[in-house]
Length: 459
Image (cartoon, rainbow, N blue to C red; front, side):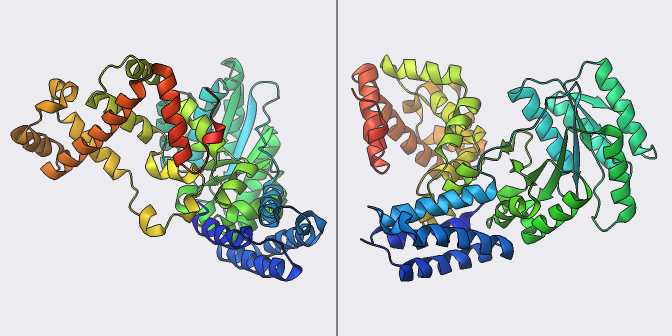
């Protein structure tokens, strides 16, 4: 998400970094580029005008012109205004209600509501420690009810059954009664997809809302619809008292125009971003972090949170102790590291959150894909336990057998072993000097990543 916008904006502001001073003329020139970049990213025109005007007022004022580092000051102004445009801070779900707290989901057909209900159920269960029940009021698409039943089973939350032909309001009321009996904290109500111009369907969801009086009414919208996402969200917010928006399929949207437009056009906060089909692919929307990603600054905070949540801490601790004690790093350890990386969204997911990625050529980015991770895990999986512990045993015939077993070529096995040797060599260096040696190596690595070594604690 935001790749094209990030590239354009980064190129534009980088041209200013080296300027000793800024003038009204080169600020106007820069803002013209910013305007074009935003329009190409499919940001709604009123939003573009408002953003550029706000940046212009602050940039042409004393704030930037008299700054010691005008280029960096302008970057900060753009970042601040992008953040303000998208809502300043993350707006959490309001669940402060007599249980069950009811969350009603609305949106167009195909926006990903049912999948989002399952993702949100998992989010609330795992991260907020809530007891969750889900119910489908989509009586027009029988497959939707079965889909939600299957997803509820996968994420291990309660499912209230319903059938095609039932009245949606009756289903919802029965689900609320069941949730109260079972002492459920949150009831998520899935609804049928509907067009905002379909009066009968809009009347139905208004009736549902009136019967349930939900504490949260979330509009689920496909981010790839660009400007239309903001316009449709506005139409729904006029018809329903929406409390927030969930943007789905953001992994397929390189422009990001919807994320920049929805808050301004609807006045409703974006609460979550959905990226991918997996039930854990839902993240709270943080405007400040998104603004930093757009300007090529990365999103280190989200990356740290993801590491804390998805990395197996026990395995990480065991590997650290093994390295510090000087024990040999083997292919089992390497496989664990590859699998952990895959759990965090793979190489592409990690790159998206690292600073400076917008400056990397597209030709290089396109070569980064997670198929290589899967291939490497498959190769290691085709080895015997003894071979994984003692890679030196892998002679020509064994490599050929491993290649056949993993559906790869002997050259792929050799390439993996070469990468393993490099990792083993690094781990060996880390073990020398124990934890101090580990810290020293980390400091050196951080310096190599662009002058971030100052972030490491002193020895």
